[in-house]
Amino acid sequence: MKKMNFKVLTIFCFLLLMLKIQAQIPTKPFPQHVSYQAGSIKPSVYTQEQLDEIVKNFYTKWKNKYVKSDCGSGQYYVDFDEGNTICVSEGLGYGMMILPLMAGYDANAKTVFDGMYKFYKAHPSSINEYLMAWKQIDGCIDDVSAGIDAASDGDIDIAYGLLLADIQWSSAGSINYFSEAKKIISAILQDEINQQTKTVKLGDWVSSTSSFYYSTRSSDFITDHFRVFACATENTVWNKVVDTCYSLINQMQTKYSVQTGLVPDFIVNTNSSAKPAPPNFLEGDTDGDYSYNSCRVPWRLATDYLLYGDERAKTSVNKINNWIKSNTGNNPDNIKSGYKLDGSTIATWDDAAFVGPFAVGAMIDVEHQAWLDLVFEKLLVYNFTNADYYSNTLKMMSLLILSGNYWAPDCNVLSVGEIRLEESSGLSIKNATDYLEIEISDKYKTDYYEGFMYSVSGANIMNFIIENKITKIDVSVLTPGCYIVKMRNHSNNKLSSFKIMR
Image 1 (cartoon, rainbow, N blue to C red):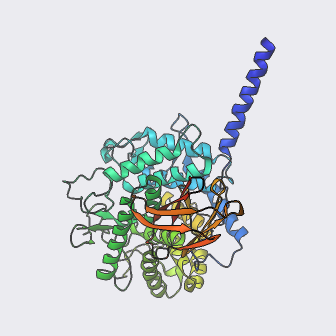
Image 2: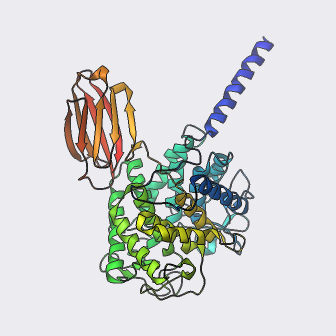
Image 3: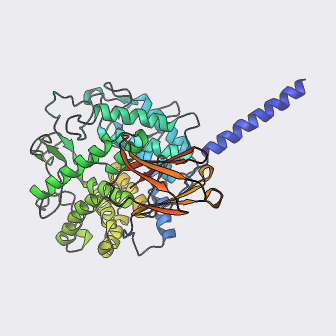
């Protein structure tokens, strides 16, 4: 009997070990070589294998220097590496995106990611427990003097990182990544989105009675994330947030930076006549300039175009691309770390925090190929040791995109160009650029199908009938976003449901 118990115990332990090992295996291991929007480009003077090696080598240095685990209880965080500040939520958000994207190359990525999740949970905002206190200092404690409240961009990236983790490792383990992501997304919508204007608030500390209520930070216009939030939560409000972001970008570029396309760090009066913030509005005398916050805008908006093809992103970023090329005489060595909206410089030095996003911005159109190659070379020569956490981390994020290794969590969404087999319903679905192609397998070729398309809010967009072996549904008129498609086989009454991203 004892031998039998030991044998059963051994088998049980073995199965647990296998489950644990299986949970560590990434679904989308690095490198992924994502196909971005048609017509987009990558650095042309390096092979794909060389680009992958550049990312891996830089990631190793980045992780060794900035990923720390000295706060106990299996926690990990991204070291801010300045003064007595050990971490900010912005940095943790970057880390929680980088780790899933590097899984496969980094065999320990899941363990570190889970530790970052634990760090986030250990430091909740005093206003909303699902958002993160924005700053931690020596002793692994929240900085009370800075306020135990949240900054929007950090929370947005943390939520997105959890959605990446859900795709990479699934949510069947000790952490339900997808469920936790939805909790944060709900909290962001409640306390970090202005319910009246649908702008991104500076943080959960901004109440409806605050003088900052109609203000926003342009670098928080993380529109590719918001699209995924809409699909993950099936809440169309996020599409309105996307529209508001692009509307504000357009207002800045047409009224205040016609020649340059540059946008300010902060925007005020978002409920009336939006304009750049005045000096010392929140952080310093460059609050109304293109400085260390808005330098991220070309990266954030270009990523939205590369993944989803929103022409508003391309138009906005191209204005910046054309100006910076002209301003520097097509010489990236002339890029400076900060500009007035009219293009005059406010800094004499250069920084990877500006160069990396400019490089990503150049990816949106083949006309920028020569410029992209030059800016990429400029980005590579920055000395890692001499740069700070912010510069090196934005460089890390930029390299992932530049190398074609930045993929998005699909939340069970069929992206443009993908094909999915719905075997139980006898259907093959291809999500093409301008049409949805549905093919019926020979086994079900005599069956009758009826289709329905809905917005994520539940509004019926169109109905269609599938009578031929191959049917193409015109979706070219759909605005960018997520849509739900349901197919009913009237012969056996089976219902197939899936989402598509336009």
